Image (cartoon, rainbow, N blue to C red; front, side, top):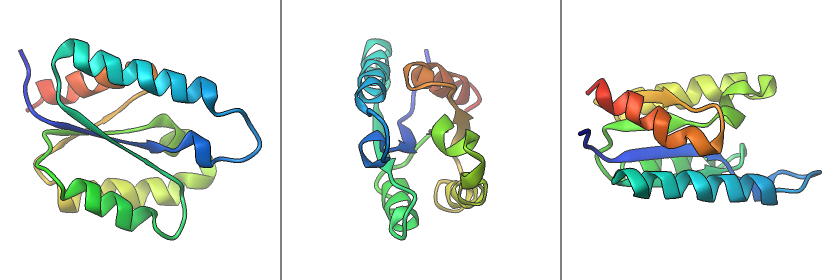
Length: 121
């Protein structure tokens, strides 16, 4: 059994233009349901990469003590967000230094990524 609170940081699909966000929103809901099935307490913060993103992330990181922070693939895999991804990792190190950092490959496997991080604690 693993324990500890998880923070999931991902892109807000409703704030990205030029595509239908509903499939991603539905996948996020399924991923959140998986946390509930596993009995893991998780908070999610969905962001747009804009001027307020870092402030939003710091606020989320300091809201609770997290054992694991999962950073979503939309932030990590999209090359134009590389610099932002680096800042995000360093914000986690600074504001949640005891948290494991994990990465998902899709919204639906976020709980599995969190489990890997929680097992490292």
